Length: 316
Image (cartoon, rainbow, N blue to C red):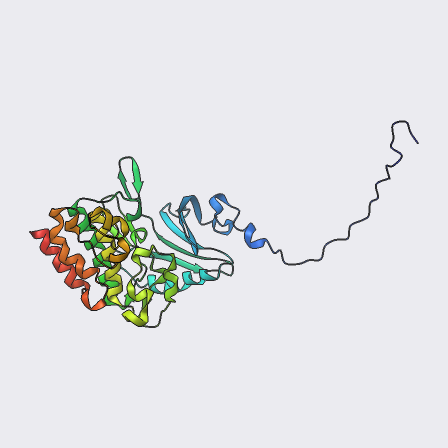
């Protein structure tokens, strides 16, 4: 034994490793998502990723530049190994049929073995106090009345067109209303919509929505009746109410701000009218009373009626 060598030390045994059998790589799908921002490597030949524009349980939205032509787009890529990503496929069947200035157009869609993606128009949003807001969700509220009316009218026009061809949204909320630099609104997010010619997604998919946007009939269809055009009108009412008042309807914050006495829980179904916050908003009380009626029978039947009332206010 050499000096300094431990008597307990054993020689290193080596064996010749046998080659592993040729099996499917279980992590292959994950490897496909190792690009910048998690962008799929298989799409890098078509698109240059510029950033992540949004994310939910079904898909991630990237801001990309097309390598063919250089146009900037929004690319919605379905999450791999997520059962709900099949919703993205159903979404295209609805979205591809919609062509309206107030609806974000679906430009291209493709269903691959390991991926689903939708290519949409990318809206640059509006800059406010140094911050760019691409959707209504981040826009500081309340906004000036004329802007609120204009935005809601834009949304109503897009929805009216969709309704006329049998398409419903059912998942309308501030984050699904995108903005242009000139503060015009375009409706997006038809992923959970439904139309009257066969397309249908379970109503349970509204669970990702803010509670304020979920209509009574979405919570309890047996009690409040089937979903329909007036479901979208209610959700548009939630957007309108927040734009005007800065609060969500039927919320404890709105109840407390109104100065009402008693516990909110005892008045949870009471709509605090916009005039409770500012007298100048009184002219919107009857409109929002109809839009946000708990009973569908109390709401506008069609969007033409709402648009007509909005136009009266704009002309007054």
